[in-house]
Length: 260
Image (cartoon, rainbow, N blue to C red; front, side):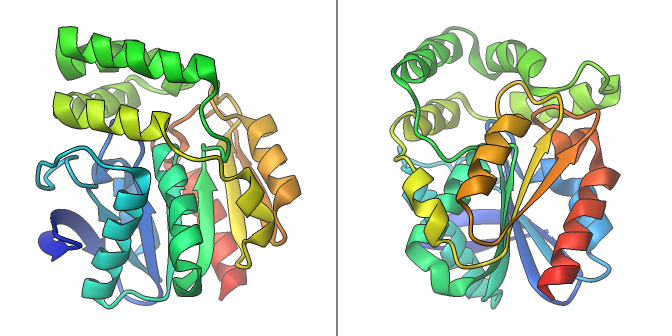
């Protein structure tokens, strides 16, 4: 675990293992700790890197940002760490950032993993919901956000320890970062038209009980990809890497084994 200055940002990252580089990008409003089981479980064969995005976790606080800014941060991190070309995986918001990365740094990618995420932009209703969530955050801070989101993020079958760990990470997120991230997600572009042009192998993964970006969303992305593979994780919701870590690790190992 260490800090590095990348793209003008002070970023914290967890790194373990040797071999091909795999960077895992956390969702909202989490941080790199959500990938602890993947860092541990995949590091026997891969160099696994789980950063805290700017403003999240232990990374430096920041002004408002776009998802493209966060993609640039990841590229700067990878350059500084000598981790190019890389396999890039992202969950939910991290998946949006991974898609932004593809449009800017496709030549530096070996493979892509889109986990519990989607390619389309926010609808008008979703944009309105983002603004309501900002008001919730201003009134009650990160705890209020965790209270509102957690029931939507985990499967009913997930253990209490998963919920407690997710809550711990979410409540650590600074309210200013929550607001910045909500605005960045609200204003993100639609990446569906980019999917057919992705030239690298792409794993699309979703929890079977994901109420936000479930199997039908994953299958819709898969139909547009040239080199896509699908993995549906049973007994998991929107946080499948935390809810079913070994099943997720098995799917990632199989995918990366084929990528080589």
